[in-house]
Image 1 (cartoon, rainbow, N blue to C red):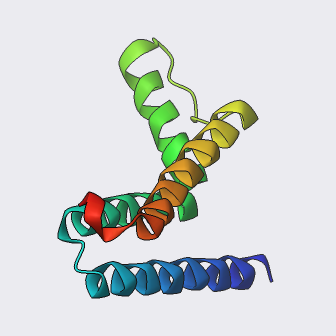
Image 2 (image 1 turned 180 degrees about the horizontal axis):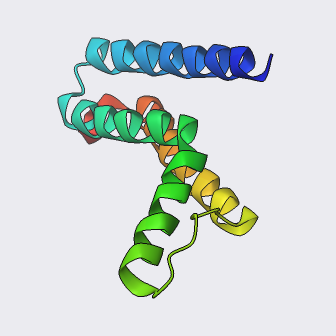
Length: 104
């Protein structure tokens, strides 16, 4: 059931991103459109794969810096910090839609 909720959430994020992109294109705000696409393309997948990315990062750090590498289980702090950063990038992208077209 949890995976179904995750997929629905990602679908809602993608729909919001597409709608925001359409609104920026209609306002002919090409400068912000490029930054918007980068923000959305970076934040949505990293939110979905946050745990896997944290685990991979820990595993790589352990492999390079420890004599006996661990399995890479991430801490709650690292997961929450990643989520905060990903949400900030997502909200920055959404805030770009609200800026007037004269700024671009």
